[in-house]
Amino acid sequence: MPEKDANIMDQIAESNRSVVTGIDEKDIEHWITISILGREYKVPAGLTIMQAMEFAGYRFVRSCGCRAGFCGACTTVYRIEGEYRLQTAMACQTRVEDGMYLTQIPFTPAPRADYNIDDLKPGIEPFLTHYPEILRCLGCNACTKACPQDIDVMEYIAAGKRGDVDLMADLSFDCIMCGLCAMRCPAELAQYNYAQLARRLYGKYETPPPEHLISRVKEIEGGTYGKELDTLTSTPVNELRKKYTARDIEKA
Ligand code: SF4
Ligand code: SF4
Ligand code: FES
Image 1 (cartoon, rainbow, N blue to C red):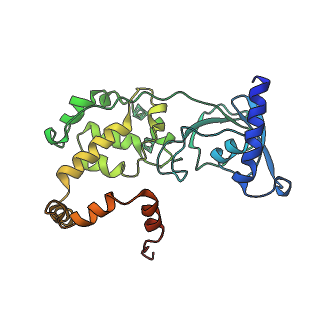
Image 2 (image 1 turned 45 degrees about the horizontal axis):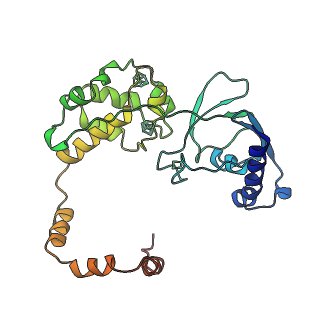
Image 3 (image 1 turned 60 degrees about the horizontal axis):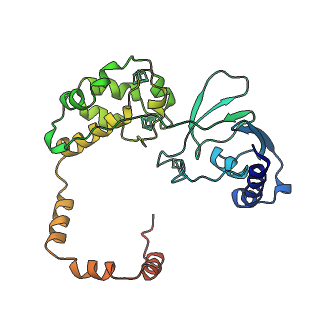
């Protein structure tokens, strides 16, 4: 790394330390060594990969969203020193380990088909028409092993190959669209896009019409909330922020 950049990284690291850990560096007892993009860093034990990278001075402009395991943005691959196996993880959910080697990976291509859900029906046809490559699945299970949500990805792909939309939607319900399954797939499938199609078909055709939603949409279309909506859309942002902060929150 050029010296000028190294200094900038050191400055960022310095400013990030207290923010990330919330405690003074001299009070941190346990440190581990990790490697990020070929450079070694000493970081406090117990941080997540994302926090450790920030501690080391990296700032996330991309690949970081919810920080809570929901958005699927922070997919990460790493190796532990001396181990052959390439591991996958969500950077916001996985703690750093001593000897962890982290590096940047390019995106995984996962083309998503254009379709109009109204033109499709549950069954095998939507997959054969829009994602025929699903039939290439080799049954190797690499996708299931890579999934941070513990989803049986291979099984939902098998359900998709049979046109069993209900099972595919059910098995993939917790998918956060992180793409780690696609990253490890030797058949170059984009599993999560197929599962999304299954859930859309399931939602449209296999679940009862949501009566409460239909009646609420009718109320809105009939102008029941017109005055409130006009007031809301014409309220300045600062005013909205105050109202949002002061809102009644339902007790859990
Ligand atoms: S099924 Fe694939 S995209 Fe969905 S959470 Fe698991 S690894 Fe991520
Ligand atoms: S990784 Fe790809 S080929 Fe292997 S089981 Fe999963 S979908 Fe099939
Ligand atoms: S930042 Fe959203 S899942 Fe990690």
